[in-house]
Image (cartoon, helix red, strand yellow):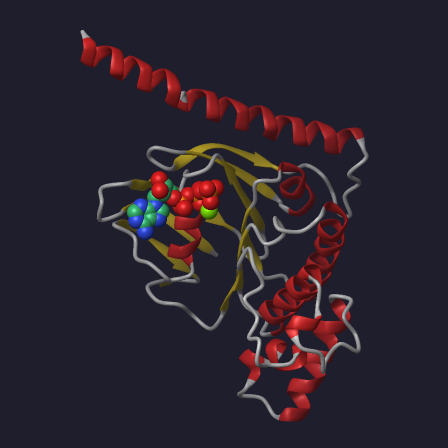
Length: 260
Ligand SMILES: Nc1ncnc2c1ncn2[C@@H]1O[C@H](COP(=O)(O)OP(=O)(O)OP(=O)(O)O)[C@@H](O)[C@H]1O
Ligand SMILES: [Mg+2]
């Protein structure tokens, strides 16, 4: 179980990036975070990854408070971040150095098959397309069988077709060991495709605005009326969250207040 308990983060310049965020994520659950720019999604992911410390509150993974990066927590960033001097197989096997070469090779080959890159073992990252590189990053993150996988807009730089096929690859790998996943996305369709639960956040300070349980069984049909309805619910909430923020009106009022 992953829990955020009244998690707050204020940066040194005074920006309140997160305020009292409390969420429980069940083992194996896929949680999507959506929300306008600056509502603290990346901040929250960095805290969970142990890359930064909260100002208040805590993050607990299986009874242990997260304070530093852990080997059993995988991270996939927006860009693949592969090691250019390592082959595809060496990139995927990077976190498996404790295993024998034989065991490592077996796991790497299986992971590459799962992401549709069988036979690409010996290629270099520079020889791959953006979508192929991101598939290597997914394989690398999941081959170690992390308990928790964090993803910050992992597919946003890719075209719609590549993105849809990567959703399938990701779910296939997820089904093997069912890690808990927390993913940030701007794409509501992606959230409804992948997540069990969707949390809508709101900025200034970053906080939870709304939450949706995804009623759709897997595999999900993006063309079904039920999918459309789920998507519409989240979009409506997102719109409301953005309207409530009303930054322009507030600024106008503040400015007007100064004039008076
Ligand atoms: N290192 C930092 N120092 C000061 N302020 C920061 C820092 N990192 C982020 N912020 C601020 O904290 C708030 C939340 O930022 P964060 O990057 O978490 O938002 P986000 O939801 O990921 O946005 P986006 O959707 O644009 O990626 C923003 O106001 C941002 O400017
Ligand atoms: Mg971000």
